[in-house]
Length: 563
Image (cartoon, rainbow, N blue to C red; front, side, top):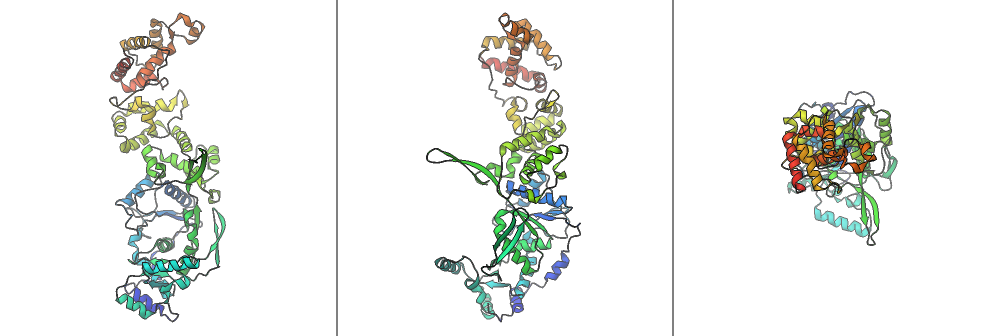
């Protein structure tokens, strides 16, 4: 672009319909009236309908920093890429985070404050163009008509010269057009983008102090990046700078893949006259992978959780599996801050909201996601829930993912609550067996799987022969004991009648005098009804499934052993 270019005239040529000013925008979007130190953070996804666990992690951290400082956490939808956008994508994002109790203070939803709206980038086109027009008036932006073929030729020239690849300096040929040439190309209908005229220079650096990673020095940006695409829609880099300024964001939590963009973003904020927010770059969530070389040797290495390879990369996976939202957030917080587990152990009655998250204590390298530890954390979390809370959460999950379990729980809540007490308590001791609601059908199918779908694989010891088991089951069927309080006493009487010692100690003293002990009698009945040698209180199980289903299972067992 010639030095004598009249930038105001150029800006009017490119943006004849833009009459608003940046000062107008400053008045329209005033600074927020918040306490000193309050953080204004955002979650700004694309509405693709897919929520990565890393996105949930970033949203949790952003919300936590806002809430613990008395600030604001808002949702902004970056929907400038219409090709990737899914119908109802925004609703999916909001619903996903609401399921994890990560609600927003503001955003593109009913009931939100509107001072800083609109919250969808697709509805903010004029705002971006006002800001680009001002940059053009100040000589920091220009229209570029360079074609894709010409860009390829520039790249080939740079590769041959072994210099930095990109659109800058002498290679930014669009800079050199005169006003008349621009006017002529516009009249001919040639497509163009609007580029930044970067004042950056090779060899200069910017110094940045990341609250997680410490001091970082990087080359200054000298690339003439695209600000507005040929359709007038902004690129991510420019849109985020404008939106973060006018939504008054002062803290941005983002993945470390954006660290290299910091010099560009700093430059954009400065050229626009905006105050730069604080950026914190979090490490990605990683997975340990084992590979085997040609010699059969195993090697461990960490890689990013992949949408394509790893089902656990999707937030929907945790919802489908039935992990309580509290469990997932609890586990993510152990990743986020190294001191969280120690704090929680010292404050068992307190919740995540009571914990103060510190960016300085966040991991600078990839955080390893451990499904085994998540399960342990979740088992611990579920053990703290009341039976009523378990019921509500199971029903909320089952309504979407297990219709038959939902039907059982809603048709007979009292019986369902009994099943919860079965696997949750052992006497006065709280058990920690269940880590997710999908475990219920797998671990306790004899309680939760409909009778016509239940397939028991009986855990029968070889020491019991078919005649012996049939004798016990047939005798038990004659007078089915369902009274939980007196069940064991009744079983002793029945066992004694059949030749089984009612007292285990006595049986051990003289085993040859009996067919077995009361333990054997109870085990055979237990296996016949549940398929397992070990289970929670059998009398309660029979009361939950009812007399008819109990007899039906006893008959199936007899058929399975050929009797």
